[in-house]
Length: 143
Length: 147
Image 1: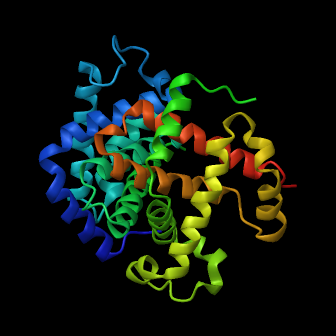
Image 2 (image 1 turned 30 degrees about the horizontal axis):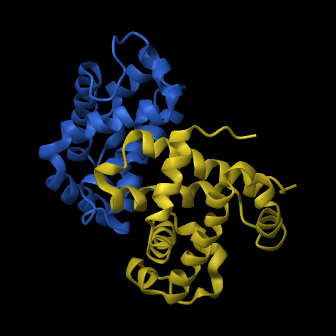
Image 3 (image 1 turned 90 degrees about the vertical axis):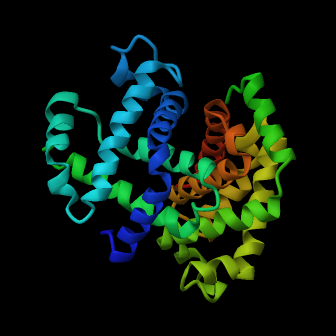
């Protein structure tokens, strides 16, 4: 299910609209994930505060969105662009890749809430494909 | 037996009591057919599903979306007995419609997105958790009679 030229254009257009709020979106999506899928908290046991809106959640949401932004900019070569992050996730963080899907879903929910008129079915499918491609690139180095 | 907290019960009743079943059903099903196009396999006789605009404008999609949402209503009204309530529908989906149960999750995700966009900030993380739990229980009940 690779990204077509139209998908890439759609993702970039949406990103242009939302990028000023990307830190907030990341924090919100991460907070939602930790609440709605409590098993994901197991990866953050070292944080003092796992509640939505807490400092570690906000900071980490921003980190994640920074990486997603970079992925949008390098959308034509995601495996290349995400190579180092893939190594990090594979060898150090060892996050089960099924969790990438979970975070992606929560990102889409936040987009639907904050940009209801922009998040049409066509934009939804392009973003879903993009986030799946990002997840795949992140899983590259796992084995 | 599924255990529901007071918050979860209240949340589900609240969401559905305020919902426009026809509109949400139409939009959720159409979104599912666009975002996960392989789901179109179950709707061969729906006519024009060639692109997003055609899907959104297709009256059969709209009508069927409403059917699905009204089907969900049975669970809303029988939260303590969802498994038994859906026994017949489960047999239908398995024996007659031959629907891969994974599709229940795909439609549930689209329903979540549509409801989220309607409720806006009212769709808090806790509300999302309750809503997704409810849809997961329904999906599980619908899968129960598959063999």
